[in-house]
Image (cartoon, rainbow, N blue to C red; front, top):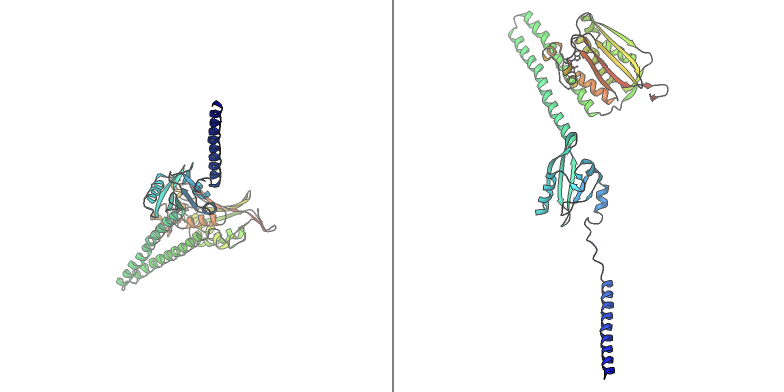
Length: 378
Ligand code: ADP
């Protein structure tokens, strides 16, 4: 009897074990047949390669506001910091897009450490059910240029109105003084002075806008500095003679610079002309040129009225005049030095001023020296 029970028990245990082994085996087989539940790819295949290659700023943000993918420019721009999107305004835009799936565009200011904020145009669009794509374009430079252009147009219109208005009034005066030949002659002289001023203004405006479009001059040739200075002095010879101003030249021999001849002539002429204009009668203006390391420094020094320290930065701005009343008398347009500054920059150089009111001013135009024998910039 005991043996029977034992046999039955053993059989039952065997059965249960067999069933268990079969079950476990089958279960394992089943598990092996089923593909492992891989994590769903967040960024769609191919999209990451595109984003990495993009030269513009692109960021993919997941449902937890974590940055999943970003192009290098996005990080450089500062809209991605430690896997988070910045600034908050951009994050808010992402939330709105996630809520209703509508593409949005907005202008966002991105703070930059120790500098002015960037002006960024952002376009935010849903990418998948979980991901949102942010495309950003840095508009800082474009906005700055637009402001400069707007100011320039406003200034030009204002500056043109003055001589045109004067000519109109003088023409009326001539008409009314028809029977007074002396008055007619006087008005005619003033008319021609205003017309001259207008011509000069228009020429300088054209020159300046041309220079602003040319970032780097492409018309460069080797220029003899002594000839450049001689022509610039000649340009102001009549005015200097009228004021009995001596313009002397102290030039190191064989100096050359590489640049656009017409532009450099305009720049040096403007400096000499200013020195003569803002100097008293019977004074001296010295123009010198010397090597300074790899550069040539062209210096124009006068013993004129000088420029107050707080105005010295501003005189290079377009239409800026220290004394507008005096400028009207001298026919100054306020454009001369901004032309000099542009010419210097587009020919790889710079311009600096030293000045003291009542003592005089020294302007230094520095340009890369050039050796015509080796045909190389020194
Ligand atoms: P402008 O046509 O009025 O001379 P510029 O741009 O050449 O215009 O110069 C801007 C201002 O800088 C002038 O109005 C003048 O007040 C000042 N300035 C320029 N050069 C001299 C100088 N050599 N001495 C004194 N003031 C100067």
